[in-house]
Image (cartoon, rainbow, N blue to C red):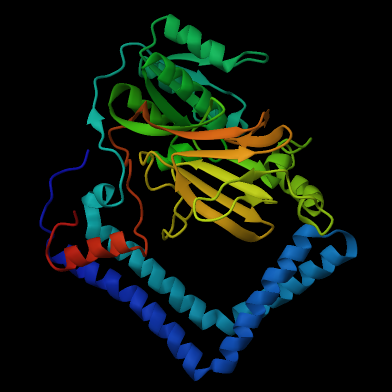
Length: 422
């Protein structure tokens, strides 16, 4: 829970000044290199262009052309690094300085600065139930000893078995008196249990026992300490967050249409992901590829069609943050984040409460990494504040590293001038 505004001390004010100066020095270094070594700068830009083009060919072609493009990309990347090594080091150093200094400058108030719903202390669960997917994350639940850790906290466990229906197990747990439902598994499993919790108006606990655990990370959980998430049952705080839905199906992270969805639903993807991507990308993005039959209305222009990728996220991603690119700074904006691309070229990026995709046939989709087919039209909606999620009192919901955005820079200016960050 966010504390009252406190006037920053001298250390935080100094850190804020350092954080504000760091990106200016990075810009100055770039300008100096451009002016004094213009030829070198042009060579660097050309090397970047060659790397980009060659990498695209290596991903979307087959046979000898793929290998030649890969070799060209590697040589161009080496050239790019050799030309721009000093500039790279300067930029990297300034980004590190900015990240460390801004984190210290904003201190305990970073949760408020970077958004996130306020968390309220709640009593321990009377009858907490943890559902465990033993196959998620290649057995992450077993490695973390979740059964024993849950028993030590007085939490009942239900382990998914072959042929079991996870939603049915959750419904039975509720009918048997569960007042808090937890899920140890990946984002797909989290979405099923979150939907059950919403239907019954009870609290939900996310335990990061999947492969990537995007939702857990955006909730402020420590993915490296799986068992620690169980403290949400006994010593937790509760906040309201949004969910996303498409044609009535809940997702906690995102829904993907087009290339990603086709790869996820292909045979062998779970066992050999990189190999599957390499095998399918030439068919999906190569010169003879036909774009998926997807169309939607853009809020800022004519309808868009012929796209190869549509990504709809439960709250927008933020690609600008230092050290945490791609995360969602907030899970309570009541908005969907929509990104569309045609090949390697973005064609649309916006936010909306509701979003509709049209097609003339069933549409493959990846919903929190799970493959399924959806009947058009695909109607996406944000469901604001419907999920009562509990996290351990010691976690940091809403806290994120600073970004080079107006909001974060304004907060640093306030601290540098001796004012509270918020």
